[in-house]
Image 1 (cartoon, rainbow, N blue to C red):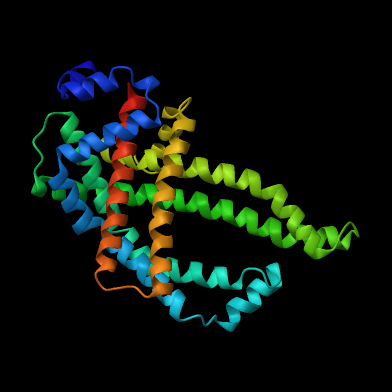
Image 2: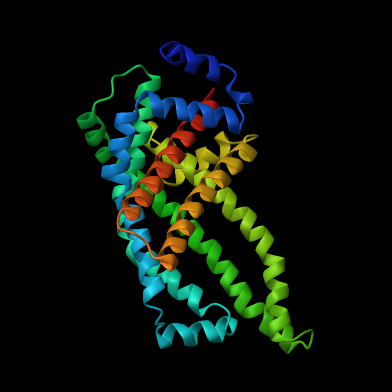
Length: 298
């Protein structure tokens, strides 16, 4: 491991020699330094790999904004489960999933693999080559897909527990005469919501680390990479949560800006600008996760 650090640029070695104490601000600065050092490669990755995902996302926002028809089956299901609270939210979520899922498991994963490889090559003193990055990203794509499958499976199980609890518990409380169905729903939501959010946030940061591990460690992917990421982040989860919070704030800011411009009337030249902003945010998030991985490995 020390031989690896000796091959890094001097600034990187100085930052990472005390990596256990590296906080979010230092990871942020180191990520900016890496992106500026290889700006051409990272900009190419953002254009050719990451841009299809924000295009799909903004297309789903456009459809939700202009086509508000909700299938009657979706309305009846959500009415039976939650009353009249969530049919619009469910329909928007379905549209997002249907439109964004193909690009999220293809171009987005290839972009993450290419970004991880680029940062790793920079730390190992290897000259970046676009063709080699593309080939290695294609090889890592299967491992990333396997890891994402397990992450999605765990997430669906977590949401399933929440939905079953919200659907069944209020009716049970009402049958026992404790409270009304509506009051029971909000009570159960408050009782289950906090632990659900905490577990989901930890799952998200563990998944981010697992993606890096799946690319850089050839024999570790899938459920093994999730477990290794959990153990690797012991004592550093607060830093990971702050990083994830900042990244998601950036993503939501771009999405809210897009929604605002759609409501006010968006110009054609603004769409590629917003797509580029979102793609660069994806690159920056991935670079931060790789830097954090090296920080945890030291």
